[in-house]
Length: 372
Image 1 (tube, rainbow, N blue to C red):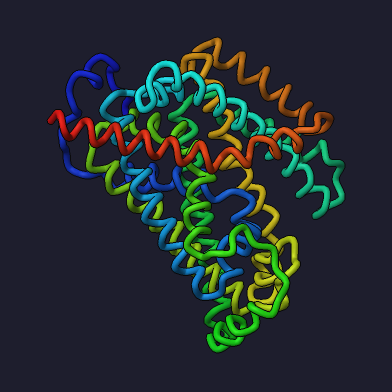
Image 2: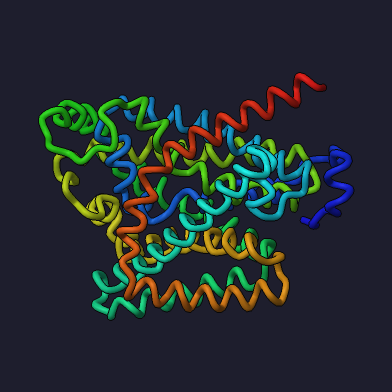
């Protein structure tokens, strides 16, 4: 994958070429890796967004697939056409210069806050699993993320682009094994769910699908256009934009079925996926900490890259110096600062900002077609 000439990219569309399966897998994998973080890998997100609605949760995951596919293809192609390499350019393109700065500033604050929380989460994972001090896991993740983003966007895509599909495969193996073990338990669990007290994001299955998309929107706007700018073939991006959400949908659907079949045992478990793995595939459960840690990493690395490219040019000396600086601040913040309060303030605004961004995207696309 070669970085396009910015002037040429903004003036003319890149030529159509024969599709490259490796590029499609890599781009789709990067998208999958970005969305499948620790919350998905543990099973908590899937439980609270979808499994809580029983089999209707499959419908919610289908809504997510359709919305995510639209966003992914649109953002990848926008980056491909205009050569966007940072979130400031993307937001100004869709919302205008003034609102673009507002959205960009908001996105920087949110993404760095979540990056710090990822470091804190990594510390908690190793602390609860092996008894290591919290700072060990936080420092380890900060170092791995720094090493990854240090080499720029291409290095980031090359690494997480392969980890993403691997995470999906592991999740599919665990969940499919659970469902196949006794398919009749799905019906039993589905009948039990209405009588259980469960944490849920929304009372409506269809709204859960919309909200699950909403929490991804700002991150997708910040990350996907830059990936699109690195790919020469437009067709590769279209296929990747469909394949990535399709893989996530498959993982979601099977995880929902597996969680339903495990009711009521998994209800209230902090890591329901680990419970299922230990009961069906004990040899995988011993590696589950690595799976969760990988999920945290594949979310944290793109988040740090997004913040870096807001202020510096990808791969420049300033970029690398800022990467080291932000890694140190992030590590310190994960141990000392009350970032949970900050995120509690920011997270409720995600749905509103997501709705606005999708609205601006639709308006932009309608205007472009009207002028064509």
